[in-house]
Length: 469
Image 1 (tube, rainbow, N blue to C red):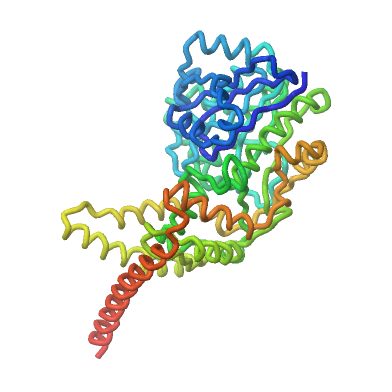
Image 2: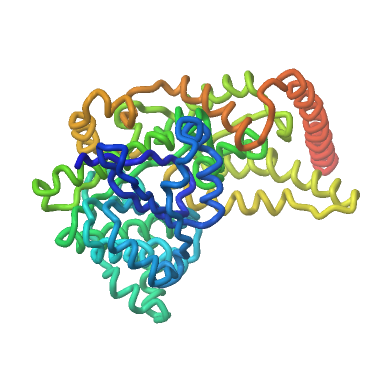
């Protein structure tokens, strides 16, 4: 039997995907078992248009099991659990809550207990060949040089899970977790240590992608459906909502297209199975771009602005602009002028129209998220990725064509020329041919906003002059 995996590509990580190996003969029927929410399932099925054209009956080869990550055993019925134990060959555990400011108990329940459940299913599976745990490149982001290894943690994951109702223990965990920027990275690091205990039972490995963004090629160029992490700030910037960032313009950022991450997951699962006898330890793969294809924030801004001029948003509230600073005071000043003053004006206008004000509250929420990621946005990380490079060398020419995952093989200019119109089409549901209308609408919005800001600043200066006379 040749070990070969079905392609799956999604930036929404709220589902666990269980896959069986494909046999070389097309006569053999194969199940791909997906444990996920109904919302994620619908998103998955809607995007694979090309697959549907090639194989109209592809859905018949998928078995869907609805589960709940926050409940024991994913709340699976005995029949579903028995099926998994009997038939599962490969487990790709991608499931997580990706909210950076998630409450600790919930983050532990989903990211740590959920991972243990997936590992336990793997341990009880009769034919498991490979288990891939998808973590994050920032699971140990307190260190600026991140190696491809599992870092030791002075916490016992099993003890934490056994005492989630112990308030004193959880308070101690929260205090210890302050070493990490947020609960997401902390709980992912805990889950990594948990995988070490299962290497004696089956081949297991860890893939750490950095910030996952829109697709480059598959399932369709520029596809994106997630508002979390870097995607969320990028969408907010394109929409004209986020005009200032607490970020050092010269910091090297690290993002990877979602299809390159998906391909890397598949390739790592294959390599883990093929070299299971040679690797007694849990290997870690840093799936990153900055090591070999670096990009600073300012370089990204320039490339994005070029792409946005070609593809302006009709529904955007303002043209995409960025006043970035790593200095806290300057960021707050920019935020006051560019975010809060226009927000108060807009909310006042909404009140006059009898509608609920919402922009000020939106910026308060954005600032909370900014606080959880400022460590990332003002730090240049150095990632080791030798294991990823060794993976590329192991793959043959056909593998490289079918499962591209080498982040050296695309330019950022090309990427954003795909990502920006992709957001316009797939996220904002706009016609790519409405460029003229969008530019006219944006000029009107700029005139209104700039006039309002000019009047406010003018009034403030006049008041200051009056007070100092």
